[in-house]
Length: 468
Ligand code: ARG
Image (tube, rainbow, N blue to C red; front, side):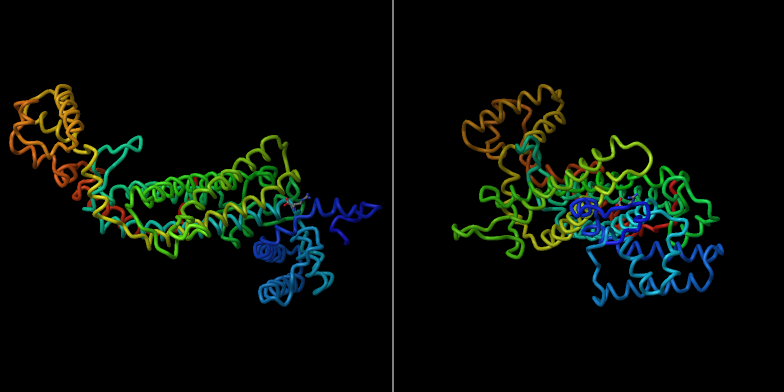
């Protein structure tokens, strides 16, 4: 295979070396970006008079034709080429002749691949943003329907205080909203065009880098050519954002798996999102939730891998950077698939409201409210805490809840108890009284839902904000 750089060499590359070095098996994913970047480059070269208008037109037409042919299946990407850049240039030259050989004027594969990868990542940041928006919309609609669906809130996986399903899922709404905000930050920080940086030190041709940048929808050109070809921060940031997102999914999956267990039965997963066992006929397993939880490790791995690849690299480009691709493609694909599937699972899950409410009553989730009741009757909180502690001990002994005791039994422990204690420790009161903003009380929850609706209504206007 004739290589782009063959001139200086007197011997063919060893076959195994060629394979080891080649990246086409995976950088063929960058085909569309490579064509788009090359078209912008050629248009700019034409505008600057570096290419004649005829040459520019032939190149642009040729590149568009290659794209069409690959997309329609008339042309297959030749995997014996070294990389996608070599493939495109080879086909172009084969099709349009001499002009094809001029496309690479004022460009290196170093800034070319830096551009391709940035374009690819930018597109996927937007795809992920759309998927997260759908997920948030789904979460919000479940929240709206469940502001009075009581369930136990846990700390240490021990029942703590009653909350609502809306409130519990609202916590995840906040997490996924922050994930989305991180994408936006990354987008605006990364949206600068590295093309024109050349191999590392710019070029001697009068390129108009701002023009190329604007053709490709960037905010402007990057400002240091060495950094331009060796910066992978945006990818690391994106992998970090995806890792945090996956961590959120993993936590919610873990809860869904627990809630779906025979012991809890808070939820029933839809048949379409569960699988059976080859041996145990009764089984309906939460495999999708488990797989999403499992795939989290894979995305973390990509982040760790790229951080490690980059840590010892001197400026500027080094071939180590070719290792950024497979893992990033995989992490982006994994996180997108997980988000889509997770949203589908959430859309079809059935919440067993009665079981949740029953569970919220058991386990002394109203003990804090009972203490607060005494505080309202003038007992110092520390004393109230002690009194209710003794009351709980008494209940455990008897195998009942606070609300099951007679007033006489309560009065034996403190004479501050009055008949209104029953109302004060009822599940409904315990939840409804939690009215501070961010708390599970239905009124507080309604206010938060209102704010979330405004947030989801606001479209993220890409390109209108500068990252300064
Ligand atoms: N396949 C290479 C990569 O992904 C493209 C850049 C090659 N540059 C070079 N100087 N060999 O990084």
